[in-house]
Length: 582
Image 1 (spheres, rainbow, N blue to C red):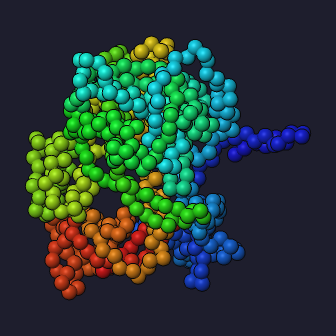
Image 2: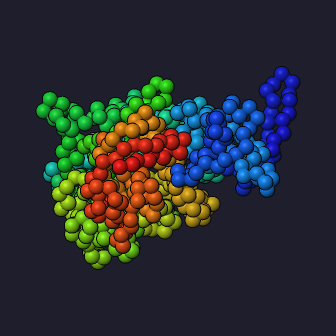
Image 3: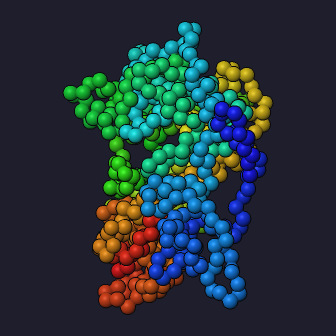
């Protein structure tokens, strides 16, 4: 509900009076209209059958359109439901709609209010670096994905020249100083808290902060002086951290690299000597007692390549390069330094808590291990490194991938906590997030905590008292972003497979439920389902095992990790469902 004021020689002024929630009888769906009639297909539930509805007037014009539809029974004598009202947002024939569908479905804040954009523009335009600000004169570099725009971390590594640390290195990590600009309870801060984090889709980003800030003022672009918090760490020849300190000032990034481009420097130090110390630092960090026992599942992320029109041209797994590993380990070490400093102060801060799997999850894991003739694990032996050992002794690549995915599924989700907490996956007794303040609100709050602890800023009582409420909000927003990103990838993957109907693929059984069996393809990192009720599957007592029906040579039991050849029979890109047969 809104009021509109028409002003002379100015644009109309619109004021929101009340936000009206969609009634319970509204469904988020796509309207399908053909010769057989009209249907509403859910955008949220892959297994739900479309609802038969009475055709809309001029229904052919609304075919393939999605939005909210209010439905109800027209009378007790008619079987089909009637659409009483609808709000259309777009067409499923446009691939850019897939991210939009995910954002609407997960209730993400897609647009910034005008007052937020104006405030961000004002901060961007008014900030000038003063002559008195401390400059950290080191040639920092950034290493990020090739399409990244919000560059919030930079590194510089040099040999430690002190006599008491032979073979050691000095590691500088510069993080964008977002908390200097975004103050507690400002309008931008309140909006950032509502968003909780940035959300990344194949075709776009929904940022936590307006682009004037996230992609410009804060982003550590080369040859552009930026405010940053630098963590300076001294490591010995074993990778053990001797000491660390924090510096607040101005850094200038010498060069922005992509992971792929910087990989060349880590591969060929003889002809490319500029970053030789970075390669030595990588080897040193790998053996660091702070890092070597972290859980390493080696699960690659899915990458969707898009054409200029926005259609998926390829679905692949992102290669994990040594440059990725270098940045990952330096960021973990930086976060550890911050958590150690804050834990020794009276300042409250948000921890990143990750607990160990419970006994029921471990029981499921041991069932999986038995079915695949692998060594089981005892509850008392469970550490992140013990899982690494299980993976190390798994000889077959397909089984190893299945085991990695199974371990990932039984692990509890990491959460933000208002109390000091450790991280099971990283095998660290204390941990927090600090290195991504442009895209995560948790990191922004930790920056504020550090500024208070080091007396860079005066304590803010409102900020100190709100940590528990902040955790509740950002844990929920993280869950929504993860769900939206996953479902957007599913829809693009389904669209990519839509012209491959009736083709055969080799796959791996990745799991099962009461109604279906999950198949991950070998050719592409794409997962679909075999529906048991159509294939005559018979459940076994063991959770991870099942049997084929009467088909020839298919009477043996199958379990997660087994190979199977399947035929693609159905794809629905609008909800991301992919269905196979044998």
